[in-house]
Image 1: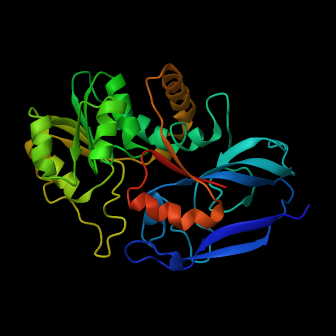
Image 2: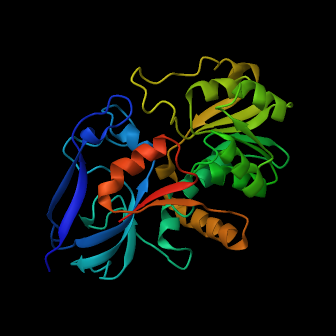
Length: 334
C-alpha cells in the first residue's frame, strides 16, 4: 500500500517567537518498518510550550531538535504495519512520534494506550504528560497540606488547570494566575478555584497579596519572569516553589531572566525545586489510574482545545498556543 507522509522539519533556530519560515513542510512516501519495527499512523499530536525550548541549541533535559529533523512532539496513533511481536496492527500507541502523519519506531519508549481510561486526546492531556506533570509536580515536589494556599501560574493551561483542581481535591485554597477576564472566570466559576489573578490587569503582586493575605504556601510556576518575581515576595514561611516551566521566557530574544527576588527564599525559609517528569516514569501507571478515577468521578474537568486540519496547521497551532488562544490542552488532530 502506498502511503504519503507529511511532516514539519525544523530548518532554523528561532529568534524570539517562532516563524513559519523556521520550518519546512515536506511530503514524501511513508517509511517502511524493518525487522523489529512498526509503522504508526499518527492521529493526534500534542502542542506544548516546551516545544519552543527544544528548538534552542542549549543544554537542557533533552537534546535540542537538530536542524533538518522532524519537529519533536508527543503523539497518539494506530499501528498500521508491524514487524514487531509486541505491537500488532490495530494497536493504539503513544510516543514521541514528531509532527508527522506516519512514524516508524522500534517500540522503545512507546506505550500502549488504554482507551478504557478515556478517549485518545485525553492521553495527551490529563492522562498524558500534562496530567503527570501536574500530579507529580504538585504532590511530590510541592507537598501541599490541607488548608494551605496554593498559587499556580498559567492556570488556564493544560498543566495549571489540573494543578489547581488536584490542590482543591487535597483540601487546599487555590488561586490561579491567568490572562484576561474570560480565563479568570473559567478558573473560578467552572474549575472551582478560590480566586484568580489577571496578570493583564494590574499588579500581580498586589492581587496575590489581596487574595492570599497570609502568604503563599505552594507556588507552582509555569511562567517564570516577572510573575515568578512577584509571587516570591508573597511567600509564607516554609513555602515550596515548584519550577515546572518558564513559558514567558521561551521566546525571549534577550535570554532567560532569572528571579531577582530570590533572597525571599531565605527570608521565608522557603525552597525552590525544579523537576523533570521523566524521572517519575516508574510511577506513571499509579498517576494515570488516580487521574482517571478523578476524571470519572467528576472531581477533575479536562478541557481540550483541538485544532483540526492535519499536519499543515502545525505552525498555526503552535503560535496560537503562545498567543494564549487556548484554554486547557492544545491537540492537533491529523
